[in-house]
Length: 179
Image (cartoon, rainbow, N blue to C red; front, side, top):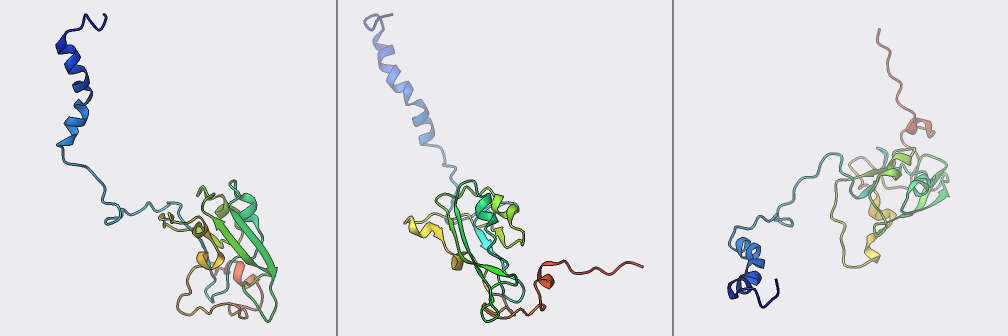
């Protein structure tokens, strides 16, 4: 059928019928999530922003082994380890993570770094609002990732409080045998 054969009625309704969906939804009540004002709770196992954990005395759990950086498929983690000394102790082990960075421009929040961590120093929180206005602010440094100090914790460097060696920090507590 050529354009000349079509009736005036068909030529008039073709463009109008294209807007039928638009006109139909224009007068319906919108179903919009009120995101910034009403935040929905995340699921319990949600993978969000990373956190470097501490021991109960405030020492860092990270021993600077760099396994998290090796496990990261996106190459988003940079760790530089350093040796602990008796004068400056940041973790109970021989080493600590002197430099720790996570580049959230690269991170895919897969959690492989969490699985690779032998000391459970790195975990993921439920925080999901990671957007920012500059690229530099999405590279989180160690001070941005460290868990806050709670009551009874002391900011490192300080000597070990929970025991004289790192075994008391990393070995499980001996359980009393049931008799």
